[in-house]
Image (tube, rainbow, N blue to C red; front, side, top):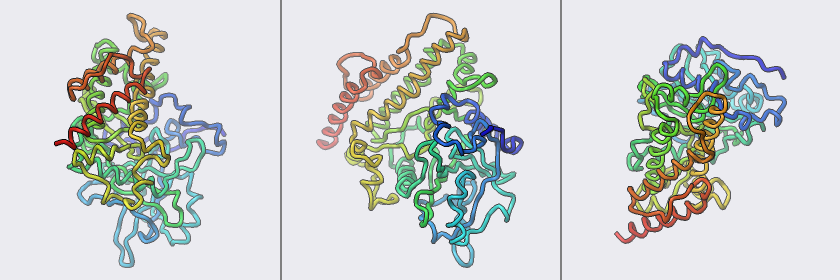
Length: 441
């Protein structure tokens, strides 16, 4: 199928500058997009909906009576954002958004429940795909201050299984409630895109939707959220963000990486895992760097997409932190919150390993490869980079942070990336010591 551009570029200019810049990163600074846009799996998918080929389009939306949906969570009445609920004399209704490529999947159910096409009753809602394609930035026409992200179900094998089943929607909303609870002990160096509400058709339980709120500091241009993949991604006309930061700072590349991606994240990761019992899916799409308007890193990371977050429930109980009792689908706790649905994913060892591997392999190793590539192309000078320079910097920062934060000494300095199982065993020893200390107090 021939690929052509689709959508309206002018509508994107309605957005505040920080959101418009974020969407430029999401669309034109993709890194290794062939890994998550495997076109050989589905020749029928309209490639114009890939983010790099797509501007703003009008999103299909339908008003559906709430009784026809499973609804998890609720939308804040205080937040100035697109509203997905309305009261009518007969029943409360929910605004149900659908990705254009899966509209045919819903048609029979929409007709059966008497859904009302929302696009006929107003100005319509603009949508722009992000790097994940199925997740869309959406806002009512000429009301960009109400923008939200909408995570849709996308039924194409190009992307793997991107159905939002009941347990996935419940899990995401529940973990969003957990991590953003005031008693959750969230470190100040981490901010999150909340997922306050999601809904799934009762007659189509593989086709849900999750609504994702946008932090106010991004909407009002106080900070720019930079997906970590965009540090390395780009093309002939879109320079990788890391090269821009390097030019502006004048720092040595490895020093800039140490100060922005290694030392701060090592402390944040340890704080999250060993004091909050929360393990991020820390790859380049879900994790974002917060930059000030002058493009100086603020020391804060943003996290989005709670589907991949993992929890150490035993450690949280030992610290007296909030649990899942009042979260969506708490009655099916083991299936929804214990892991990812298979036995090994419930093991704390596995969760720690998965989180660290995502960051070290998909972020740090990739930026190391990028340094070598840029140097080979003459974009960077100086001494030749080694294949493990970045992961070794992170390893030293992590081992040093463990000693400083927990007075726990790792036997020797080594590259965690190359000996990850060994390091996770060290972490399990630290975790056991923390558990014993809490139980003895």
